[in-house]
Image (cartoon, rainbow, N blue to C red; front, side):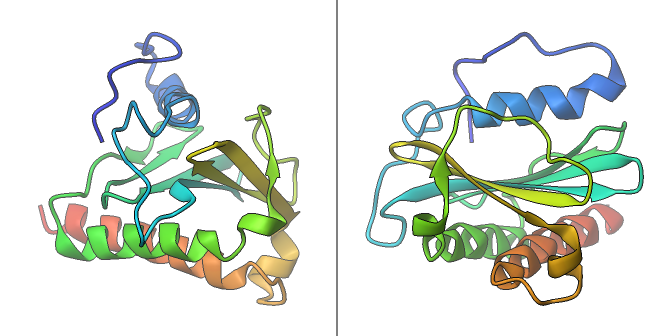
Length: 167
């Protein structure tokens, strides 16, 4: 993904980089990405999953073109991954899977992080951003109807981690 317009200037503070990149993604349109509707991706072109990890929030971003990144509210992050087939495959799967939950999501312009004990799924769609907010306990206990989507996002994180470990 090449973003030609940004919502805010990138920060020079390492701890602010992840939230800044997350905000940039959530404020990017499909046209700016540029990604277009297709048979495989008729409504959703990108997904951001926010979930609590200790005192921080991790965000896994996946796009229909196979781009994937992990941003955190700490100083850790992984950007890119599109150059690796395993990452591209995992990222595309998350976006395809998200379309199944499109009707469960609601339009939003509130890009705040989830409240404690919650996970948020943001869907970047060809008609704006949508969100699903669910409890972390139901996801971690595999009881949530969104567990498969969360699991697919976890695979993106796994694939990104594996390619960065081999560098």
